[in-house]
Amino acid sequence: MRRLLILILAIALPFYFLLKSVEVNTFNMDLYLKSFERNNTIHISGRSMEELEGITKTLLNYLREGLDGQVLSPYFNNREISHMEDVQYLFEYGFMLKKISLLLSIIAIGTLLLRYGKRSLGLAFFYGPFIWHGLFTLLFILSLLDFNRYFTYFHLIFFDNDLWLLNPKTDLLIQMLPENFFISIFSRIVLLFLLLLSIIQIIGYILMKKGNDYDRRFI
Image (tube, rainbow, N blue to C red; front, top):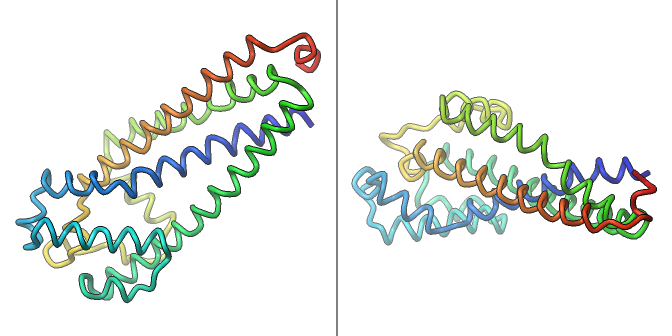
């Protein structure tokens, strides 16, 4: 039972923080505005900064609130809207999985703490994130070497169509969100995620050191 709880926590809690990191960065309006300035989006799209900000707010509300695709029709063509509908499904599943992983984490934390003590909880916190650290550090390095390849792999895995292949000369969506934007936001997601994992491990180390004799009997 103890090992199962530790395994559940080692998977569910980091997964929750991964999805939370995605959410925090995806819905950070400042990232988009800075990207528009950095990537000369005003010139490329022919839209003012005020227009781009308004469109971005609509786009993010569409994803967060699960709005109908018609709210995007004043700005995007049918192909872009169809792709965003696919993206919206991913976010819906992501929000659901985030809640489930949080619930599992709370149950595992509470049970470990009550039945086995602080040291057992500390063990889960400290050792659980290591595989996530290795996986996402490797993924981060690979993305720096050839982001486009792994960005393509991502779309091939999560989408069953080619609607994500847009024309930067005519499609506003890709003009607003070019590859440079995704490189930047992906880096922020990974770095925030790894930072959160490190915080979990620090807490885990402290709990292990404070564990009492009762805790040690279950090691």
